[in-house]
Image (tube, rainbow, N blue to C red):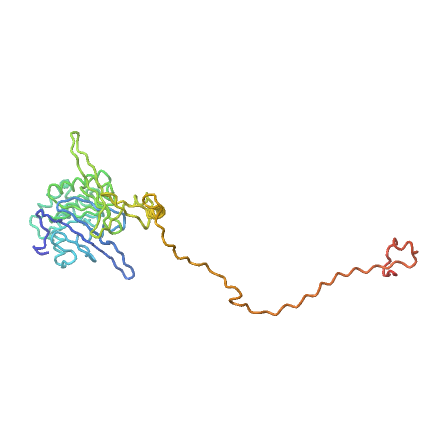
Length: 382
């Protein structure tokens, strides 16, 4: 990066970092992932702020773009006077070497395991051709509280000590911007507090601009401002206010939603769930407030107003809506059915034949014949 393009070290009126409608798309052979979808962000010089969001929200992608590790797909990303999208490769190399420092969550990305803490801190100074690298290395390790551990290898350091070495490495070339990706993700709560104390000291004493990426919302107590990202866009912003009282300082937080230049905003998800707002919503002006209601209740309100009128009077009669006729079955007179020959008259059913009477024996007298049993195989004489 040329001298004219280097980030200014003097305080200016304009923001130090500006992201305007920033888009980042990662492409593979058969897949496209939109990590940033028109993100807007401004960061002042000397500010210590945090970016939070769930996994996949785009916060790490934003950090890679701000650090010059990735180029944005579209939009604007400016750090000082450097345009990340339009910068040449040589400008980006100079920017990463002299003007930005990184602290990653995994110690393997920060440190060389077979070097001592002192040698790890001095290594980037050798690439940057800095003078008095040894003296500066000792000074940085002293600033992070590791003066007595500078000649220990990584296997002899705890996780918190390794992260403090990583902070010293990120400051090796005296950068203007420090980017920390989950710097306390692998340490305990007490060690995390020590790391935040070091970062606040660097921000306050050296005027270092610090951006911390985290998924922990409690980080709002450690920084001055928190910007939440959801689905690749900035959704809310939380600003810490300090009120000074006789019995001590009182810290409070104000949360704001971010409205971009086109009027888009993201309402917090918990509010949408509480009011059951899905899909459509009704937006009204009530004095100096904008009120958002569920679309279902809004439709009911409009229907009620159309029926009763604004002042309780009968509403103006509306023209009848066109009636859609139901399906009509066609009569036979319209579409005659094909004639079939009349069926032949059915023959009357044949009455069941009475069983033949058995004959009576001829030797039975006439007056006794009605009472005589029939004889087998004989017929009755009539």
